Image 1 (cartoon, rainbow, N blue to C red):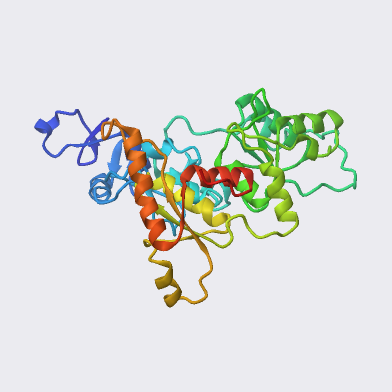
Image 2: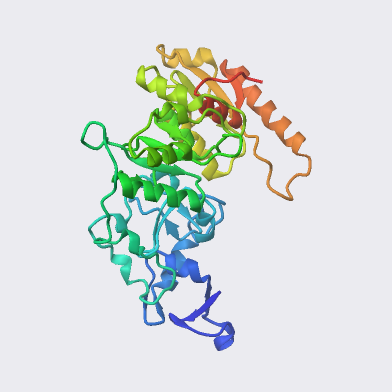
Length: 376
């Protein structure tokens, strides 16, 4: 905790505590309009007042000063909440952050234009440095052969790799000249995912999005095989076939769906999310469902006959989705009771609208398999 009086750092009991602002160090440094002149925090009082009105998109509690760097984004976070979301991207030089929904946008350090928040603090420790191996002038000419004589248009993205695995991928990109990106943008061709001893990979947001986009999802063995051969090797042998939840062939089916230009997985399906969700998680589910071709209903669905009267062209199937997330601590000890209530509420809506009931897990399982799963 830091303590400020008129912007100057003081002891917590300075002036009897009257007029002293108590603020977390990280929250202060990452607040958008706060900057530092020597040790004085400028605009801190105004930022505290502003943030008191803003709810955190993660926990729902007010005091969220940190907004997404994407100008059109309305999401705000507490610094500590955003740090718990692995898909957030950070620029520690300019003290800005991109939320998971806009992680494919560029941060100031990724563009040639400087950002005004470089005024934050000149003596902060922990700013990332460029390693000597990646500095201009230290490059070496790799022994690598492209069969066609010109580089393939590969772009690599990593999913849940260990530090050691990241080092291997880094060596691969130096050897081949293939670019690597931290976000799953439209140019990515290969997602390299970490696997366990059984060859199963974790379900990350990148993994699920890669399936929906029809990208190659490969194990580290493909990178190693390419490096050993000093030329591209066939990807199909190294395509990941199962995830840690036992769903198989998702990446292959997603790739074939894209190649054959088949309809998207949730084409013709409308989703209504019923009941309690963490706001950030609900946003991810909705984004995934939309990416898969589904439509999100913002209002409770009315009866099918009423909908047809309002829209004679309506042909979509309605799915009422309820959450299998555990209830918040100290709110209810009987989780089964909560889940039964959620399902009953969803079933009531489904009966009224002629829809079907499914869980949030059904959406994820279906995307991971690239195939609609049975409704249990």
